[in-house]
Image (tube, rainbow, N blue to C red; front, top):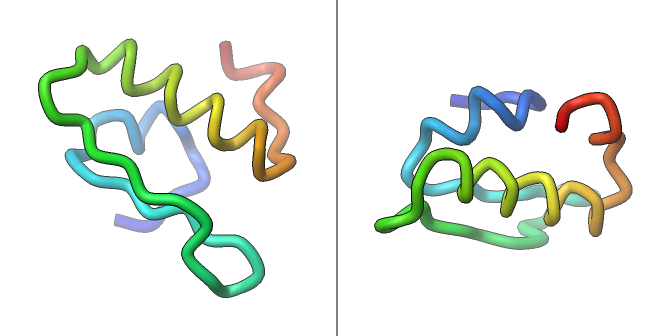
Length: 56
């Protein structure tokens, strides 16, 4: 799946973050709750400079 929606992405097991056409980061859900994984996604999007203010 390709998405810009962090909520939808939080249902995945593995996420690749792209920046300028290259892999910026990769995370795995593992044993984390979906809520914890969602918050990890938001943290990485903040590093990327994405707008996540209205998502939390």
